[in-house]
Length: 171
Image (tube, rainbow, N blue to C red):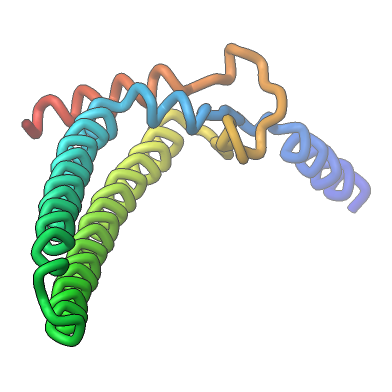
């Protein structure tokens, strides 16, 4: 009985001393270096700039219309001028609302795509951890949970390489 207790105690001590493999990933650096995220940023920037140009173009057109109307309004009866002015304002408001809806749709679509990218990254980190025997992989960077970590435990570059290799094969 005494030998059994000693064996169990030795086993418990040995299992408690088992080292858990822990690494971390700098989330900010990972997303900055991940090619799919870089491509997404480029596509989104192009769409955002196109939306801005459209807004500026429409705004400029309404400014010209308003200026032309001011000249025309001087020769009109006040009631008629007010009626046309109200119509111009109403069209401008409707166009503003339409542009706002388009911008919201662009942002929502962008957020869906970004969420998808983040999901891919999380899945790949999890798969990397399982494949390489990690007990934990922590997230670092802004808002992350790693305030300090030895560089030897930084898995960021390895995970970025895996993600970029997979992404380039999918293209």
